Length: 433
Image (cartoon, rainbow, N blue to C red; front, top):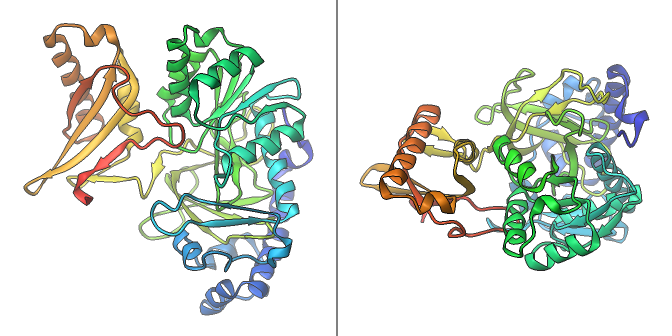
């Protein structure tokens, strides 16, 4: 279902004309209200009048998360605080948090984008949405909440955690839609089984899962466990929150990025050069409708590609492929670039292996060593040692063949590894400790 047919099905020529108009207005806005941007643009000889086509966007310097931290807390806002009606912030685990402000119009835009996202997943005003994304400074919970209310659905603002209570609410209230991280969806299925409830017997029919990279194999696991359609949703706090891009229920193949609000690019993460359509690289986003915190060419660090081919759903906006990982999550193991999601895909595709794992990297002498701990089904774990050794070797060989690195696989009992209510942390890199 298309929420806003007028804008979501704009012909390409009209969409690009709208993008250019809004881009010019955004650059003028930041040039005259944000000293940081004026300085950056002056350094490369760009004024608002310099932008005459969408191609001119490539002349503008990138914005990074470090830029937000260096202008902490409100240095990149284009409006005075009296016009800010909402502030969100990242967790700040690697330094100062990144602070995001919203005007009243920004909140309306965000609600519109989340209404589009939920509608793309087939959610209607008839649904009961169990929103298990975290509320508070994290953008996920309130982003989904406002979009759900906009389409007229019933929202249960349960937030993350209290997993047994989540299952009780799901059963008693008849939730039809689940929104949370994919790893938490898997954990909730386990809790349901522990509570004597078959997850497939709930009224859930669809889930919108995001906030962390997840593989196609994990999607299959979630869909099988819950008997639902699992939809991928993408966003990040700095850009607006969830609702930047979403899969449609018709195709579930690539996430429609709402190009009337965002201009996407793909660059080589090493050189910063633009890459052709279809090539994988780092996603860069320019916001063109935000008031409080517009960002020019923001480096998301997420690895994906742009898909120009039309989608069967009728939306004309480009799609981004499933996020493969982040440039700052990329591991370099003995000279080989490895994303945790690549290992996950191999693990989850192996019969008898559960979708809970941990990658531990250490160094012995001058050599990197990798141990992959992964849970296996109870029936397999209780098998004789020889069978377990055979399964571990099989996984080790598959990782070697498909990724090109040697690892040690350690099979562990079900429910041994840590569970996560928010974003899953799958890697322990002791080389940095």
